[in-house]
Length: 90
Image 1 (cartoon, rainbow, N blue to C red):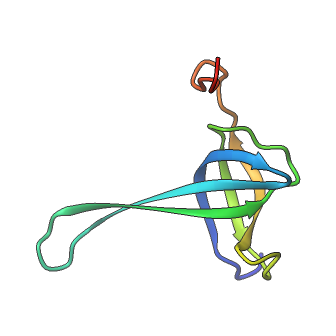
Image 2 (cartoon, rainbow, N blue to C red; image 1 turned 60 degrees about the vertical axis):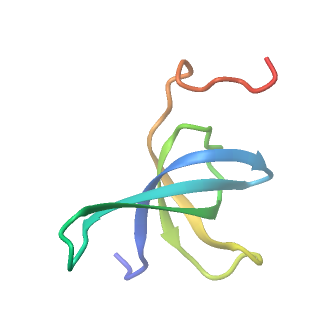
């Protein structure tokens, strides 16, 4: 096992060729105020597996593949059920 960072997130867009947008949600307690804070970060990841919107995927850190891509989809943790996704323009 290598030392590259791995994160799990939700695919929010797959409209680009071989690229998906993955939303990473992080929940932590504020160090001073002790309030629970929800943080969301969106990253672009290289996709050779054919992910769909709504899939939960594991991404791994890689060398820079383009101006914005620094992550690669390693595996699909959970496929989305087709009922969750609403088609736009329909």
